Image (cartoon, rainbow, N blue to C red; front, side, top):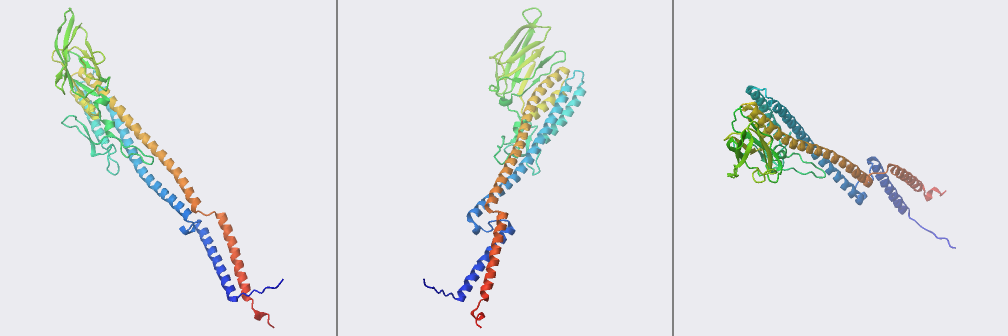
Length: 424
């Protein structure tokens, strides 16, 4: 073996030592920055993939926060709309109680006029509730879009009330709910959908009694929304002693057409006539899709007029007018029966819309819960991508600190070495 002689320059040793110390100092500084910030990735250059994953998670978290702020606004609007529907239901139920009391046969015309005035006040309150707005001035029951006051009326034209907007209901999404309800569906009637009609009688003396029961839809597919009149004629003695006979004609006032006269022969003169007009019993002469019964003692010229009711407001106005102008308890009973049937149809629609509003609020709660779960998952994704494992970070920092101290000490020891220290 031969001895090899290695010659290293002092300057080169110094350069290598200083460079190593600098690298260790940089690493120690970076570890200290990670510990103080709590993040493994402080800059994108530390880990480009992890930085991109963390940024994507933060963007999605920001979007969820924006969607939740919008959802809270929508939730508040629907809560106000549901409250408005609750107030409307309460007003109609109060009106119904008053209408029932108006059917009392002991009431005088002045008493019925007083009840009509109370009903008028409730109807005005109902109009205000239906046109209620949210804090931003947007109608709560504006459907797909409407004027600032969606419900107009009473109007001098027909129909007497109308919805000044676009009927329909916005649908919900996975992160949002509508901020308005379909007021047209809640308060307005459609003949083909609801079959709500109101019957009014010509002036009949209190000595005779002629009424109709509530008009019931039996086949909505046949209801056409036309106005009708039923006119009695040729009322007189029947062929058999003690009986009477009557003839009636059904007129379509919208099309200006009339049915062939129908004769009801030989009914007892001392008992009221009971006549059912329905497609089920008389397929030739009837009001399409509707069924009702006429009871009483008709006379020549007596007329019963049938008109579709446009809205809950219309049903209330008809009840107010009929009760106020009822000359006797017979006419009042007629008005009460019609009003109760029509208001019950309106209450059903209002209850359905209020229930739908409640479901929207439940859906908003479910959306909030889902968004919270997504936020937790995204926060976990961001944490895994950029957060520092503190135990590992402290361990790495301590190891690097020990190495840095050792490098400084070794450099200081080597720097003290010199040949002149060993020359005596």
